[in-house]
Amino acid sequence: MARILLVSHDGWRTGAPYLLLWLAQWLAARGEHELEAFVVQDGPLRQEFAGICPTGHWAPAPPRRLHRRLLDRLGGGDADAATLLRRTIARFQPQLVYLNTLVLGHLLEGLAEAFPDTVFVSHVHELEHSLSLSTTPADVRRQLAISDRVIACAPCVRDNLISRHGLPEERVDLVRVFLPQASAEAFAAAPRPQADSAALLERLDAERERGTFVFGFTGSAIGRKGFDLLPLLVRACAERFGDRPFLAVWVGCSPGSPSHGLALQDLQRLGLEQRVLLHGPVASAVPAIGRFSAVSLLSREDPYPVVCLEGAALGVPTVCFEQSGGMPEFVAGGHGLAVPYLDLTAFADALHSLACDPAQHQRLGQAARERVFRESSIAVAGPAIAALIEAEIAARGAASRLPSASA
Image (cartoon, rainbow, N blue to C red):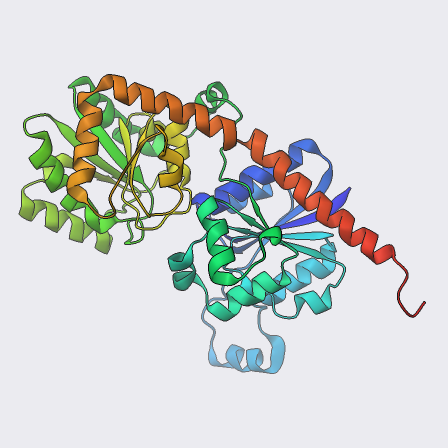
């Protein structure tokens, strides 16, 4: 039994932390390794990690009075995240540290020298623009240098690591983003909280009963996700759909936020506010996605978004932009629709075609469901990741048993 430390950059309800949580649940169910987790920035998922294994986290110290700040300068202050991670490794003594995301390099200085017998594996969920927003080139180089193995969450991520960061192909393994269930039946039957989305679900049910074509997305209301394009897409849909009713939904746009206010202003000036429903983050967006007729992925860059896989699991096809990350590759060959990059007229045309052609909609949705469980479920990803980390642990153990050159 090996000791494995799972490190998450944060504990928020977003794709990468969820994937690490699902992996932790799968590994814990196998019972073959001793697990511990470390969450760098606290969030609601930390409690779920803590339900699986011992979980530490770093929290910024509150503002201090002058005398406390003077003590900090003398070395009596609270530890930073890098120090806490180092202390966790020293105490737990894991054979392997699993770094989930490529934005942890600022925590890793000196760890290779301090823990030479420890294997480090990085699971990369970012493309280049995300890295530029979340880390620095020097920290990326540091993390890749310490990583004995690198796992890419999508083909586009693997290609980017090889072409832009110079990693040899043999150091990068592809394990696609996955869902925590192994079948469509298990996915549909999984319990999910709905208390914070009850009003949203009631509205979506009523719209569908009226024959409204409902499409939408879930995620942060940021430029990388294409939230600023939403009013323009709705305008293009209004022109394309004519009198046919439709509703665009965005789950994850907090009321009162700058993004929410600006979108409402745009929609009101366009006279389209009744065609859009903006809703804040929810504990689980899956019940809402199940009410969509299409996932509308407006992202400029998204490696392999979980929302699209969740839609596929429910038979809901995705419309996305070409050259926007991993989804164009997923939808290719009849598993969804991809339109030219930032072409909102083409995007509206694709949504309209799904609304007008139920047979096409059903065909694409069924093909997407079959593909997601064929290659993007925990039944595929779990054994693949376990085999990689166990091989690295075994290789390090074998190397440590070899006699030294001076012996």
